[in-house]
Image (cartoon, rainbow, N blue to C red; front, side, top):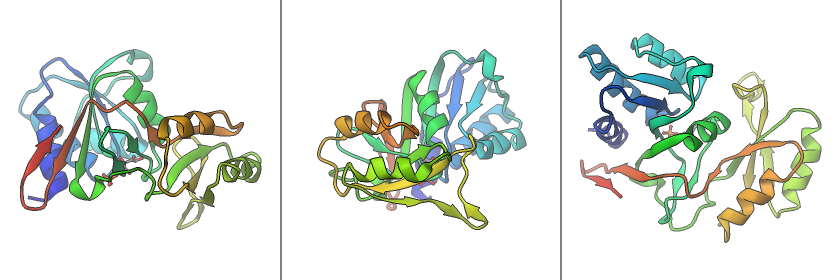
Length: 220
Ligand SMILES: O=C(CO)[C@H](O)[C@H](O)COP(=O)(O)O
């Protein structure tokens, strides 16, 4: 089985009747959402809250019951992917551009499960550029502030122009090289005017569920 599917299916086993579940975004979360769709079809009673329009559409297509925004206060479990995971379970997220909603949802979650394949494990975060969500207004000024933190920043593009998040913002993919102090950088980025969110998820993940291409599963 594909390692992403292996991890996604394993994470779905943590879900019990009556739970409120956050749905992540991306090609690994896709498998977890499908596994939950199968359980719902078999009669599992859960309600879910998606982190992106894409995951919302997928969940709806699988008839997974969704919560309205005003109904969401705490979530029992969120299952989400990551672009990099270090040995302390700190993460870089936002490769799919859903970092803001993912961070909001992760922060109100009792059990935050991160599902990855083994290519995402690193000794130190930073080979993957840190996605930074910024307001479009004067984004060049915001990019300048990020560059003052010793980063190369690139405005993310899509097929038809600049990539626009579900929140109407831009993404500056910011390469800091291998990051020495991830917690400090997370705070510094948040202090820049114009930055809405950054893709460093520090001390948030409870368990990493990692699928390997030889079929092994690792949970830690
Ligand atoms: O943070 C994310 C989206 O904003 C994704 O979870 C992350 O990019 C991993 O995606 P994939 O499972 O497709 O590799």
